[in-house]
Image (tube, rainbow, N blue to C red):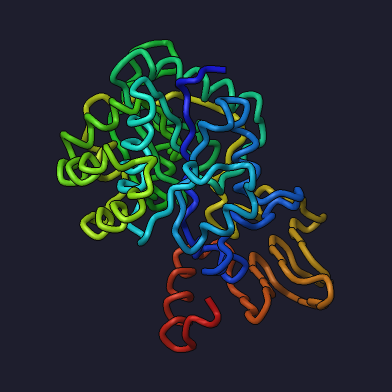
Length: 358
């Protein structure tokens, strides 16, 4: 196993589109969403233990979830848990991990991956990751994984690549955030667009050079801590650093601007599990395409997803394409594919009912 390979797992989100199952005090990455006996985070860590030494796996999370990470991953050393004092999107998260890892190993090549995705062909996934790591360690490439689309999905970002070689590694032409349906159909027809899996591979020094060029303020902030990483003064430094950081994503801040961005085409059975609708797609269903997790009876209903406790019975009739989620003190009934409304629901609940239900 290559000692210069590292994995950084981002586990600080709140999973608002999975509300009310995902809650502020227990977000979806810590839940057994797929009914496997493991949380999504635990599954992600287990998957990457075949890529690099266990001590080279780092978790970046919000300080509110640090104890959850420790409970679910007791094998980790304190230095492997990077605690963010405030939410500042993914660019500061990547910068923190990259500068810290480079301080320990200037030859490091790293994977940056979400903690809450589903991978159905793990063998193919690991092969793709190792190919990308091998490619990235040889030079100054920023690599992301692209999944060949099989439908005009509006919930994913897209990457357009330049078809210049017969290899799996392609130069990136454009990034597009979640498109409208008609545009997604055109992307599918064109044949040179793939879904953006949000999984990145690069040398630590390559991404740091990109920060210096495209986000110089953040580069300066995290460079100042070079002598403090892995010391008792790291926590205090990070509190100060994050108070100075802008809220910006790694995609917008660097990947959409850099000229050395490549996409590796891959197909390993992937879902970002970003919504109830995406969970419905991968769940086992009955003869009417209803995915039921809990104690429920449905009549004249199809294409629904039902989530509830086993000690409470849900009875529904005449529903098509609905979500019925009965989770603790909240019951949500709505169209499952109207993903853009979920943040609106959460916002309205917060303003009118308070944080208790979030």
